[in-house]
Image 1 (cartoon, rainbow, N blue to C red):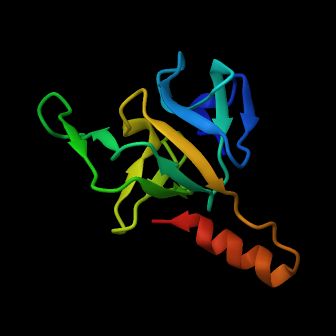
Image 2 (tube, rainbow, N blue to C red):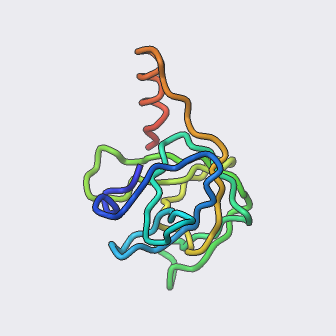
Image 3 (cartoon, rainbow, N blue to C red):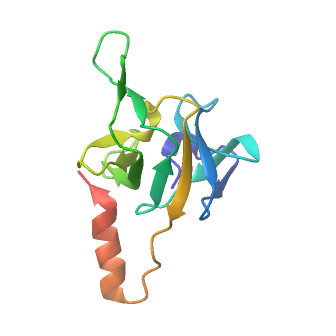
Length: 137
């Protein structure tokens, strides 16, 4: 998905093997940029698995100057949070330790590879299970 603030940006869906870069877009938010065009947002579906080239760094809100922090992980699963609240950021990453960080808080220029896309549901039960798994918090 692409967060609400990237709705009007040039975008495309993520593909397996994409080498994405965290990027600050003109809309004032951060997301993943396509390797072929740095102004093109890449929309990632909930459940997509990503591997970063280095430990992930992010700006910690609420700290003086939004200090940079490093997470001791290089893999994450894309999630959407607070979907019932409009006009807030929903795109997030869940790390192996359970920590969830909004995508817009990631520092710019980090490289991530799309390892796996979520499976497409084929039954009503799978559709409901995937919806439940997409909603965190």
